[in-house]
Image 1 (cartoon, rainbow, N blue to C red):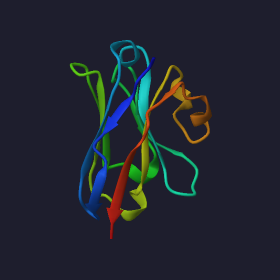
Image 2: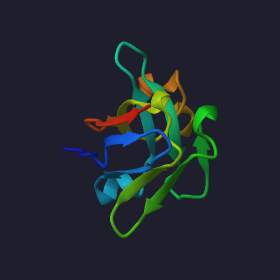
Image 3: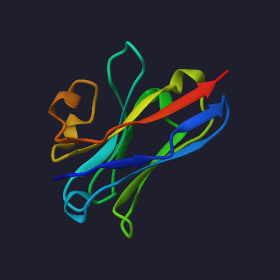
Image 4: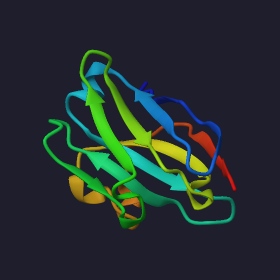
Length: 126
């Protein structure tokens, strides 16, 4: 059974920082592209950031460019999302995702994601 275990969510004031982590198996980590989507209450789930299985390429949605950084930690089979300069509009449930197709890491391609984590809640107060 595939597990994507997320951690690092919490409550932070606007302008603050959080670091999300997603730990998975060696099989998934070494063969799948991985990334993050987020979903606010009553809203559609949307793409945030992704990194290839090799770590050689990354992609971000425009609203987080320059503020969020995605990375891979091979020693721990973990991807991280460093979130700086957080804004109230970043408030959402953040989901880790793993997929064999790099093109699925966008707002439409989320319907073809192979594996999802359980989600970790990020709340940014004004």
